[in-house]
Length: 589
Image (cartoon, rainbow, N blue to C red; front, side, top):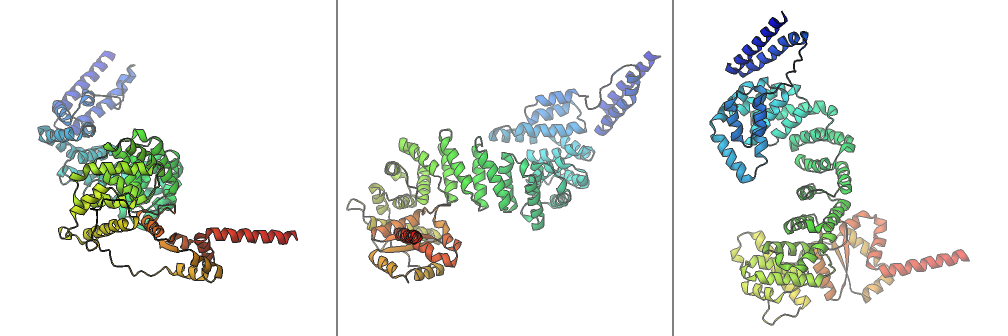
C-alpha cells in the first residue's frame, strides 16, 4: 500500500511538471507546482520522506542566470526555458546588474544588441501580463530595471507597471517604497508618474513616524523634491534630526545632497552632518568629497571647521590625488571664497617642482584661484616665477582674451611677466569683436586694472611695453554713498582732539567692504580688495579694512570703540595701559 501511495504521488508530480512545461500560461504552471507541493507534502511526510519547501526549490534557470554576462545572454536563456513570474523579474534585474558594471562604450553596444534581440519583446510581454501577480518587491525591481535599461517610459509595459503600482501603493513596505522612489526620481513626468508621485507623497506623510531606515527617509525626501509643502519639509527635518544618531558618514554626505535636491536649508541638520563628516574624513573618495563641496556651495552653507578639516586632509594626502583632482578641489574652494591654506601651500610646491605639468587650462585655473584668494605663500616669488615661465611657453597658442585673464591675475598677485605684457600690448583690445556687453565690460575692467598696476607698481619693464590711456580708460567713478554706520562711527571718533592730531600726522584710508571681499572666516582680503590696499600703500596711505559684517555685529555704543581699536591699535593699547596704571595707582593709595 505504501508503495502504491508513493507511486501515485510520483506520477502526479510528473504529470504536473509536464503540464507546467507545456502550459501557455506561466502563472498556471507556477500555481500548479505550488499546489502539487502542498498536496503531496503530507503524503511524503506521513511515510517518512522530507519534502523541501517551495522557497528552497531551485531550477536550472536560476543557476544559468547567474552565469549570464550580458543582456543578450539572459534573453537567450529565456528562449531555452519558460521563466516563471519571479524569474521574469529576476531576468530583468540580472540584465540591469550586468550592464551597470560595463564601461560606457560596452554598455552602449550591449544595449543596442539587447533592443535588437527577438526575445526582448517576449520577455517584456510576459512582464506586462504578470506584473500584477508579482510579489511587491519584484514589482518595483522590475520597473526599476526596465527604466535603467532604457525601455521607453511611454511604452505599454512601463505604463502598465506604473498603474499596477498605483493600485498596490498602500500595500508596499518601507523597502519597496524606497526602491520605487529612487526609480521615480529619474523618470520624466507623465500622468501615471505624476499620480504615483502624489500618492507616494501622501503615503510617506502618513507613515513618516514609522520610517526606521535613514536611506529610505533620504530617498523619500529626494522624491518629494522642491515641490513638497513647507509643512512636510519641516516634518521631514524633524524626523531626520530624530535619526541623527544613526547617520553613517555616507548618510551625512547624502543628506546634504538631498537638501540640495529638495531646495531646503536646515542649519541644525547641516551642522549634524558637518560634525559627522569632519570626524571621519579619512577614506572619503574624491567624487563624494567634490560633490559635498558643490552641495555646500549650492546651499550657500559654509562651515569653517569642516572646510579647514577637508583642506588639511587633502594636503596630508596630496600625493594620492591627481593634478586634475587637486585643481577641481581648489576651484570649488575658490567658489566658496574659502582659502585652503594647507592645500595651496602643498600644490604650490608641486608646481615649483614641475611647472611643465600644467596645461594651458590648468594654468588659467591656478592663476584664477591664487589671485582670487590672495594667499601669501611661503615661497611666493619662486611660485610666481614658475607660473610666469609656464605662461611664456603657451603665449603662441593663447587667444587675446585668455592672455588678458592670465596677465590680469598675475598683476593682482604683483607679478609682471615682460613677454606676456608685450604680447598683450600687441594683441590690443578690439571691443567690436565682443558682442556680449557683459564680456566687453569685464574685458575693459581687466585692461584698466593692468594699466593701473603698471602705473602705480612701476615694475622694471622694457620701454616697448606701454598701454595708451585712450585704450584703457577706467570706468566712471561709482556714486555709492558711505555706509551710514561707518560714517557715524568716524564722526564720533573724530570728536577726540588727540585722534584728529593722529589723523593729521598719518594718512589713513578706511576701506569699508562687503563680506564677500574677504576670504571666508578671516579678514584676509581677496584679490581686488588686496590690490586696492596695495595701491593705497604705494600712494602713502595706511589702509584699514573694515568688514560690513563686523560693523553689523557690534552695537551702536560699541561701534566707536571698535573703530578706534581697528584704526589706531597702538594708540588704543597705550590708552588702555595708561588707564590700567592709573587704576592700580589709585587702588594702592
